[in-house]
Length: 386
Image 1 (cartoon, rainbow, N blue to C red):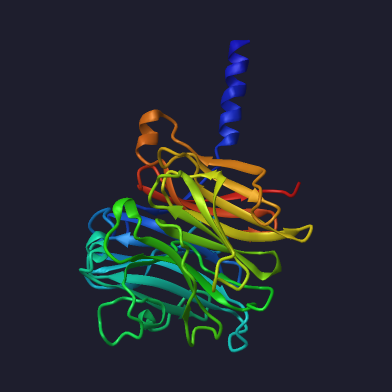
Image 2 (cartoon, one colour; image 1 turned 90 degrees about the vertical axis):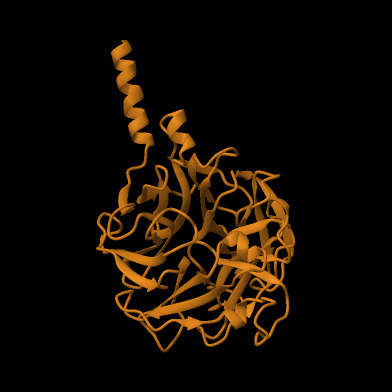
């Protein structure tokens, strides 16, 4: 009887663990570490996985490239690595891709890859000793080839440094996403491409209180860009956004202060230009880490959302995929993607950053960091409506 129970327990545990496919493995293909994954699907149905390829180590600053791998079979196998941005010995990071499907000039779709460059460590930039810039590249052939980079820093950043900049606000550090950007499909902002981002304001604050999440967007397919409103909650930091019903926007945000171990949520009715609501969501626990939110369908007049994060209030562990059927008001479905098999393993960041992609009507893809940042892996997760 004990053997039967043990067998059933093992079978249950194996079924509970979501299978994954390695995409980026640290120490291979020219990079010591891979971090900060992002993923989208192109017009042809291929998956494009982006990451930071950190050449010499695991630190957030240094010689960091933006790299890409592609899957043509829904994530079962992945291509060799392609380097998209090499900023010499400096940092290029925070890849934030999105597919523009509404530009009549590009009926096969046009992919935007937004990213940041930096010339100093984050805390140094927060103290006014350095600059983070914002760029994008595009691809009109599904991610095979890419355009020359375009610098949009003067349109979307508000640093108080170079006098040639239009704005004279004291924004210092700056980061896109990380994770995918979005394009609105409904309402007055239909076609708008929006990037969830964050910056620091003024002198370095205690426990990250100088951080503020914000948006930037384009209504003319990348010809011009505009800065949206900032979230007023101090410490609002890395962010991801999704369209909810009626063409409204929900932004889901990391609380860098860590005083409340929950996700911050912002609601906008004008495409990120202002915020009608901001609140902490007790349904979404968080250990001060990145998360990803994505619209994957609709049901009874509301948008269906998927959300992923390390759902543990103490450490980066318990990576969980949640599904909401009512614009993110409730999250009745929770699927455990990865957790530390042992207490020691959990201490080493078993699952940290993640990003989501809609593979098809019944499957969500999740790409995530696992095992102390030794791998970035992909899983395809089936889900169903109530």
